[in-house]
Amino acid sequence: MPVENNKFLSLLGQCQRAGKLVSGELPCEKALKGVKVKLLIISEDASENTKKKFKNAALLKDVDIICTETKENIGRAIGKDLRSTVAIIDEGFAQQLKILYQKRV
Image 1 (cartoon, rainbow, N blue to C red):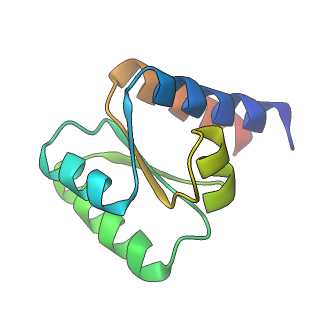
Image 2: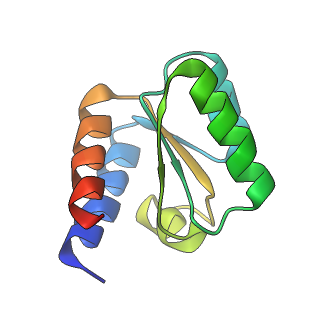
């Protein structure tokens, strides 16, 4: 696992501990409807229906999307079970996650 990858997952964990992250499909849907999401992260191994549904919802709200990691890695990083979607509700964390993601691509 590249170092940048560890930093990305570590920052997701920090975001969870700070209470600036919403995880799971239903809570993420609610957050997107509430217009407070700054960044949406979808796991690479999410179902095509899940990816399509969340990409469309994020496009409507003009929310940036990152499609990366596995459900298992995302869940482990935030101390939860498998997670296919995570919504970041803090601008600072969202910007840092985007920077770390760009370094990997």
